[in-house]
Image 1 (tube, one colour):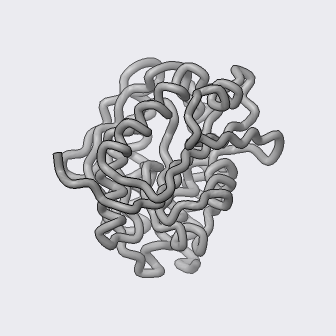
Image 2 (cartoon, helix red, strand yellow):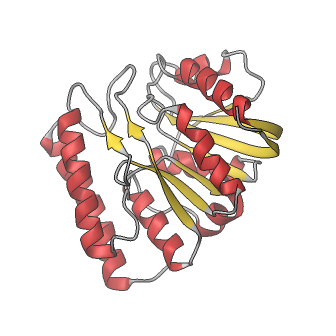
Length: 249
């Protein structure tokens, strides 16, 4: 095993909604993986839950891990708002966030954190660089995969090809960078906006390959039909057009 990085200060944000069957395995797996690779000065996992009807928040509170902090959000809910609250309340010098259904496997956290420690400002696990792959399966995932592929290529056309996976959402970033830039948007389009503004600020950004795997349990929050995706797609297109036309922070 490679030598551990020492004296790490890390916050891992897990935004959740109805992930009762996933949250404890995800917490345990994440802690196991990161502890194998790093020695910590400070480590926290922030579960930011949008008052899940399946009581994900309560299950996380009772997971038995002292490193876990749970925030149950009763208003102003949504993916971007959850991540942003986690960012604001985090204490680590490096911040990670990821989807909480195992489509973002925790085993890929060490590679992005290590590269931030080596000097990169933002490191993203990417499906669309060499070695990356989207292998999601199950209900609705073929449509998700196709639409993600199309959306990223439209984004390349409008914003350039220097970045590949504009809808990844699996990231490690220096805390001062994300707290300075902030997060804008509603759902997944926040990531396009964040990466584009970071590039305009000349932040050092790196993409690393990973396999986007099938959800372990539960159902996707993105949608189950073309109407759901069309509504979300309009938000993405609006963000893209705004960034392309204005080209400003």
